[in-house]
Length: 316
Image 1 (spheres, rainbow, N blue to C red):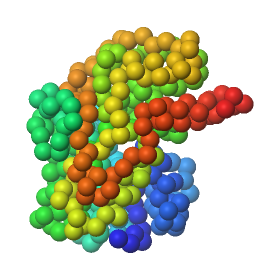
Image 2 (cartoon, rainbow, N blue to C red):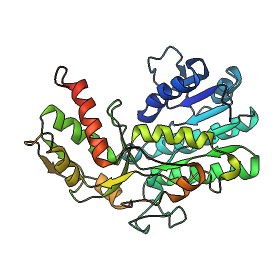
Image 3 (cartoon, rainbow, N blue to C red):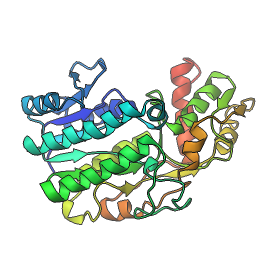
Image 4 (cartoon, helix red, strand yellow):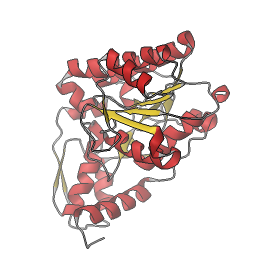
């Protein structure tokens, strides 16, 4: 598939900011249009509120967009704080993107999903794509609806829509974006800075995770995949490894022996308890070649090295 003009919504977020640079290096800066409701500082930046359908249609038309990476979303913890906004952005915003894409003859829309679509009745380990999905958060509910909307537009409207269920994503470049798995990034930052960390999850809460470089490559791979080989569309499971806060603390002590974390669960614990501990990613491997390059220890090592260079210059 050839991409001529790529619109990235939510370009100021954790994934969007790094995806903008990643795709620019691959396809060329002139092909990438980053957009958000907050200025990202990029000279190519365009203001776009995805809840405004007229604005969505205008930007697609003006820049002759043929591909969209739709990343504008309100995440799990922030969604529980303001469910009305989460619904408006995650559902109404997506509907505007999909409807406008049909009208403007966009070739491909990528809509990342999340492990938030799972719920308490979902099996806890090696969860397959087809399973019980009864989310208990507004984030999970809106993302499950997003998967189904994507499938509807694929089969009923002829729009090529693809997506994957991301686990917790780890990055040293961009700050946490209001998700339940943010504790992992926060814990690593505290360790590097020589500070103790108050963790908002229990020490034995196991969740699936992935390093952001692998997530970026996965988005590119799925976007470029041969459509004839895709049995699934918007709900691929992807994950690289799983760990608990306690295991992350132990791994960080290999670098910072005096580091300590204290466990003070808050409302996010209930969210984490509704999610599985590991995913079955075999369909993604089989249908479009998903293959993460980083394991748990490799991710922590790379995160620590880069965080140290950023936070404590001269000690890298």
